Length: 107
Image (cartoon, rainbow, N blue to C red; front, side, top):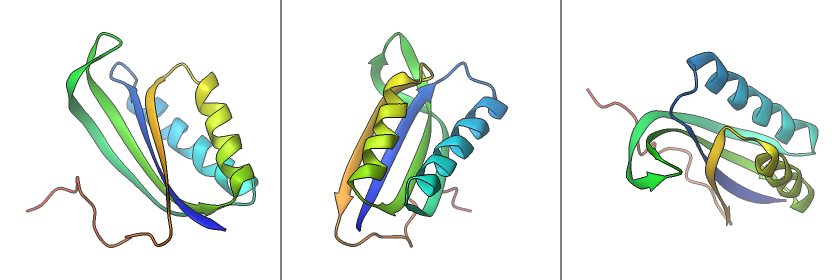
């Protein structure tokens, strides 16, 4: 199995409950399709550098997981059908960095 990171960019007009439900559904999808979720980071509502589909802000959810090709295929198939996702990116890694959080709130 390989390691993957996936970042979902969600519409800005979603409610917090909808964002949480999306996070949980994709978390469950990874687990059901022979994958293992290592870490999920919710980066919150961030401004976009450029407008995407007339949105200036978006919610970001970042998944770090272990899986095979079937896991990634199921994940991306569901993303294509989900209207609340405006962009996504999946990257494969040999080793994951689970210590650093790039958008955490520093005191």
